Length: 623
Image (cartoon, rainbow, N blue to C red; front, side):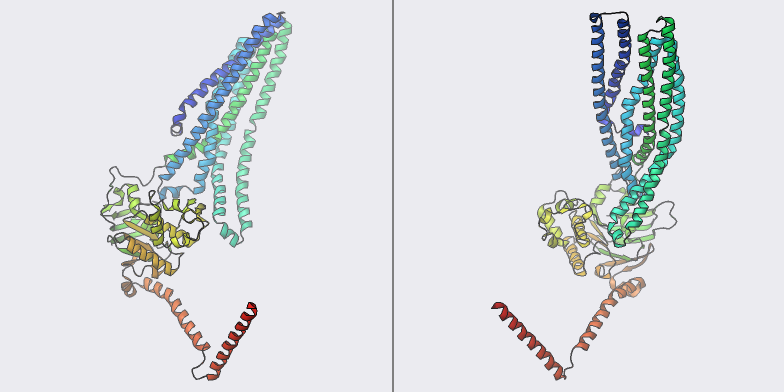
């Protein structure tokens, strides 16, 4: 774990090494000051004059200034090293997440990843800052002070040697008790963040169903759970302070009692006032060093669990990686599913796809239909290798997708996912995800094909209109059309539209399909849809049912051979036919019979009266 974390130090290694060196100089100055002070006190006691005391004063001032300079230098290098380390660590964790496949991401919730990138890294940063400065300073100060205490006071310093192991044992027990609590509390942090994320992203549903009180209670329970565990841990850690204070006061009582007795009884021969002053100062340094050590241990204990969670992300091997010798050429957009079986995990009891044998010609348009959970999206995810097949193979352009360079494959297989996502930035910036070098004219062209240019032109800033995070300032249909335009800029060999016109009307849907056919005639197009009208003009239509192929053919063929497709078509079109019949019936009922002259005359009189009234009102208004 430490080796993995240390790899993130990189260019801040010099600052990290300089900090302990500078801290050593600071400790040397601090330990030397009581020694010189003791000499000064002894000189005063012997009646030294001002001229004899000035050198001592000068040395003390220089030592104090040097200690201050070392402290400032250590603070600067420590902050540079710790902040730089945290920056690199965040970069490394985020970079690791970017390499994850969907299967890897399924292992971690998004709220957990956010916690690891924020709270956990902050904890590790604070621990690292303490390790390179405080954790170096305290042991050095402790050992140096004990040595100087023995030099100055001899056997009396033994009291410090006795109390240090006792405090160390107490500290060990506290740390061992607290660590499991911190281990569990960070998992509860994930649950707390998940509650916030769900509430914010689903705010419209929360308000629509008036569930604010329920969400408040759920959040309060999660927050209370975290608070309870942290309170328990802090109570145990709080034992450090009274334990240290008790040791401090006990030691000082012993030192003052016996030190005073020795000074008086021996008349300064065994222990003089200067030595006694240095002893008490060193005793204070020893016990303060111990208290700081306890704080360092507490921080390290808290950070240990955070560090393990961070390293877990960094060391997670992507389930989908580039092959040793990746292919970077694709002859065409043909797609072959050869006896494909797919499970989302090894432990899954249910197969998402089973024995899929499908061959799609380059330039062909394939429609895919099926009920919810029929594995339509699972099927197309295998083409761009968002997941890998469990059995069989998927080939694009005659080459197994596992043999392609991942970036090359995904640049040639454009996917407009079912869940459309726009990022904060202008419309131009979002569109150029498809091609960073696309010109303005190219942007306009693909937007016209995707039927997006019309509504973009109504915005005051047109293509420079800023899209809010998640595309919240555009409608669902507008978001879908922008995502389609973005995919068209890639000029892919294969274009997959995963139910990406569900929020647009049938007329716009038809115009988009016409645009795709004319703009990308040689591109293989796969259209997943819930409406038969979106796929009935495709070259072939694939019907999936529970991960199996239930039908494959043209619209006319499936109407004859596939019950699922026929039932879907009839249910979607029956409503339209019934509406037409109802409208016709209503018109016949409302219209007068041809021979009913009285009705016709009445209608004519009503119209004439209305026209006369309108004319009179117009004249009055003119006057």
